[in-house]
Image 1 (tube, rainbow, N blue to C red):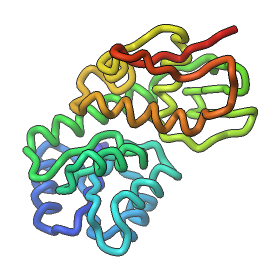
Image 2: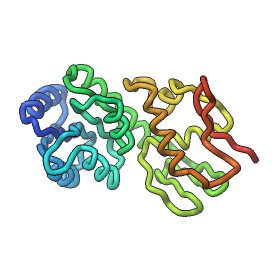
Image 3: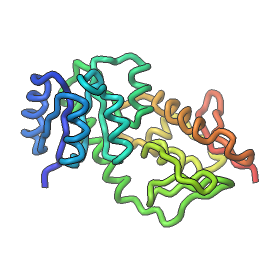
Length: 229
């Protein structure tokens, strides 16, 4: 079966351009032109990946991204003319896997799609025999679940993967580039600020959970999951 891409953009010409290009590469392409329809189209068609504009009628792309994340961990790439840092940060905070700024190069976008799909396949095929557990926290990749004090907490897939990796290697310091390599994949085309955004969001979720561990910034180096038994 062909890999299915949902393209969401109110510019019909862009949708058609992406449809022609990706169909030539062997993908099946579904289109949607407003945010409300995009959510329903996702539900009914279960695409493998979503290319999602931010500026959409009826419901903006950030809201669409959040709603998709509430029901699925399928990869999302934001594709938008809004290329300021704050826009990228908001997209990543809503659970997007990558962010591409318009105007984009088709070959670069295709490379990003392939990279995100490879990471998703690797994630789905990964074996997680045991959850990582510390005081008041349990992280399972097999179930894609974070429990704080025994209660499941909503968390985007990439935040969970980052937390799992750091906690699995507690007290070990990793640079941002190392974390991009280990969590996002060596072929990730984004920048290191992605790590900062995800750490910030994790800290908000984990604040006050325990005084025996924390996500610590090692200035000039990177981050670690610090555990004091």
